[in-house]
Length: 134
Ligand code: HEM
Image 1 (spheres, rainbow, N blue to C red):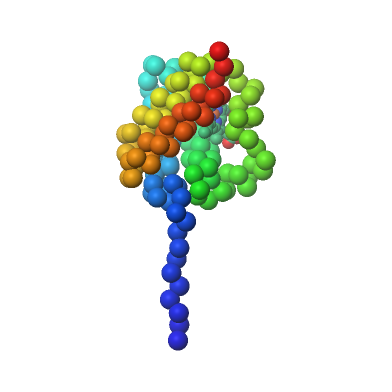
Image 2 (image 1 turned 180 degrees about the vertical axis):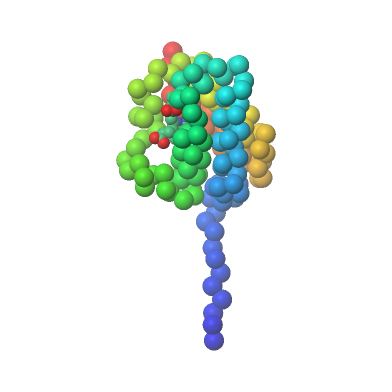
């Protein structure tokens, strides 16, 4: 007799918040805000003219970071996000722009459970602030 195999989804923020669809939506909103809001002009100016590579890369990084598929980490073995940002001169003001745009993007997409989504926004904001100097 065939045994039913129950697919088990890991209980991590990535899956609980809706997987790739949610993470892509958050990152697209984040880069739309960065592109359109004068308040984030300094942050925008640090990025390449074409944001398409970042729209592809950030959601994959965040997916692995939040307990989802680890494609980005497999494609970038040993790469540390803090070290990768060392070459950039990031002021506290610009770090604050990153943190605020990310929190707004998460609030606009509003994935459920919202308290988990907001907690993720807070941790990402803290990470960004940790990259800022002065
Ligand atoms: C603190 C403010 C930050 C600034 C000013 C900043 C700036 C940048 C810049 C200029 C790039 C290169 C983009 C390009 O070539 O167009 C980059 C890449 C990237 N950043 Fe940030 N970043 C910040 C915070 C963060 C944080 C907090 C994360 C993740 C939690 C992050 C994740 C990434 C990723 C995944 C890449 C692409 C790396 C790759 O795929 O090789 N960044 N960032």
